[in-house]
Image (cartoon, rainbow, N blue to C red; front, side, top):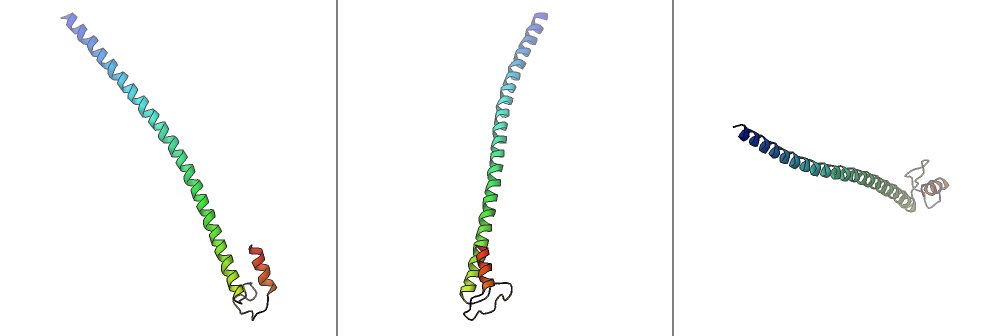
Length: 106
C-alpha cells in the first residue's frame, strides 16, 4: 500500500513539473510578444506624432500661401490690401503700403 501511494505521489509530482515547465514556456512566449507589441506601439506613437506635425505644417503653409495669393490677386485686380484702405479701389495707382505689406508676406 505504501509503495502504491509513493508511486502515485512521484507520478503526480512529475506531472506537475511538466505542467510548470509548459506554463513557464508559455509565459516566456507571451512576455516576448508583449515586449514586441510595446515596442511597436511606441514606434507607431512616434510616427503618428511626426505625421501630425507634418500635417499641421503643411496645412499652415497652405493657409499662408492661400492668403498671400488671395491678397496678391486682390491687389492685381486693383484693390487695396493694406490696413489703411483695405478693399478700396486703387484706380490704377500703386500703393506703397500695399506693396510693403505684400513684400513682407513673402
